[in-house]
Length: 308
Ligand code: GH3
Ligand code: MG
Ligand code: MG
Ligand code: MG
Ligand code: MG
Image (cartoon, rainbow, N blue to C red; front, side):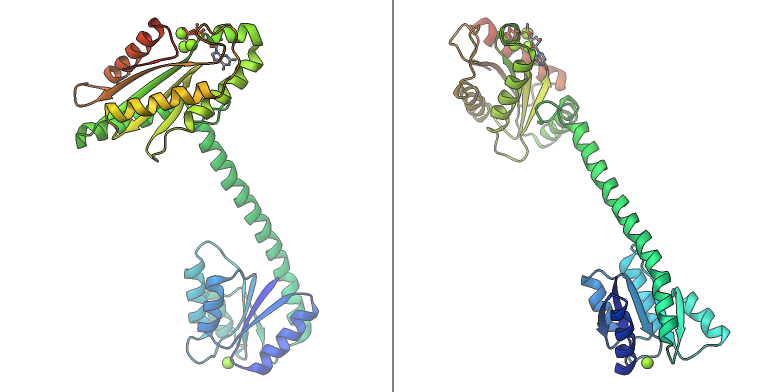
């Protein structure tokens, strides 16, 4: 355990330190409440042993400051005191202490107090481990709820909430909003030719290529579903949206993923449809329809191209 001893008497600190070290614990000394608090502010402590009568902050005041500083992160505090009457004992516990040792300190009792506190230390350690696991599990869960399991990019749910939010922003701030829909060409043929597992692998590569293009923090590349991807580009006008879409198309082509069934050349390609909101659409459905229509035209015109 890391044990902080706060006492203005050097002799007492040395005595306590001696016992504590012998038990295999790590000791830190502080001469007064302020010094002890300063240490606790930036260091982890497992147990505090503290005098009551000290210049400056007394033991009770220091305890109060420690408890409010650490909030839910509780650790035991043992008072070292010459006052052994019932009222003094009650005052120690009410002030937030967990035990007290009478001065002159008996090394045996000190040792036994520490042994008792070690059990609490163990429980604290386990509690912290559980807390950490819970935090990690929670983070993993919230990541999973917003990301596609196969490709790791944003999922449909993420797309839906982001598009609605950005559409409302664009309408309110009179800013453009570009929406790009991308669809892999002849992907059914790809699966038929190379198998579903290879198809999944292809989806990962395509997703990675698409997501590597948008550079703004507000852009969002998503797996819309199946072999369809979408990119939401807030504050992006039609021209900039087109440039980005063209970069995405060439990024996927540049991967040169073999696809014998692809008509245009023998690599996996994308068809893309872009629509930019400039105040003309009443809702996201109209924006979605416009980019879908553009995508349809790209397919009609022979695929591996952008329409807007
Ligand atoms: P087009 O050029 O007109 O887009 O033709 P296409 O074959 O790509 O389009 P279609 O919509 O007919 O077929 C899409 C295929 O994508 C069918 C489906 O099996 C496949 N697909 C959808 N989701 C997944 C997936 O998660 N993994 C794999 N391997 N294939 C998928
Ligand atoms: Mg004192
Ligand atoms: Mg499709
Ligand atoms: Mg289709
Ligand atoms: Mg397709």
